[in-house]
Length: 154
Ligand code: FES
Image (cartoon, rainbow, N blue to C red):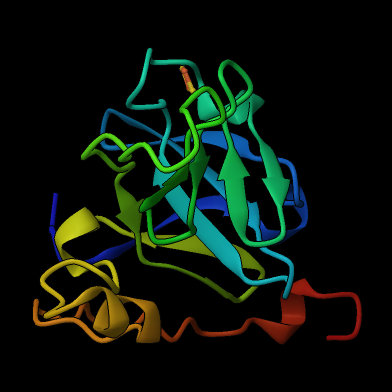
C-alpha cells in the first residue's frame, strides 16, 4: 500500500448523506456527504464503545453516533457527549478522519490517513478550524483519463 496515494472506495452516486461503510486496506471506514455535498471519510467505528459509524446520522457537517449520540466534526474532533453534565469536559478522543475527494465519478480516500487530516498537527483549535495543518499534504487525486468511447455520448 502506498500511504500517500489515493484509492477509489465507492462510486460517487453510492455516497449520500447517510454514512456508507467501505474498506480501505483492511480498515473499516465510512464515507458520507456533508451539507455542502462534499465527501468525507472517517474511521468506521465510534471511539466510545465501537458502534459502527455506518449507523450514525449526518447532522449538518457532523456525524452523530447512533448508540450514545456522541457528535463528531468532519475532521474527527469530538464535539459533544449528550450524557455529560453541562460544562463537563469532553473525553480526549476523536475519530480518525481521512482526506476524501470526488473525481471522475468516484470517491477517493487518501490512505495517508489521520495525520494528514486538516486538524492533525495544527497549532491551535483555531488553526484546525480553518483547515491549516502542519503535517504533509497528501498527493492530489489522480487525473484519470476519460474514455469517451465508453460513454453513451462517445
Ligand atoms: S458507541 Fe458511539 S456514542 Fe457510544
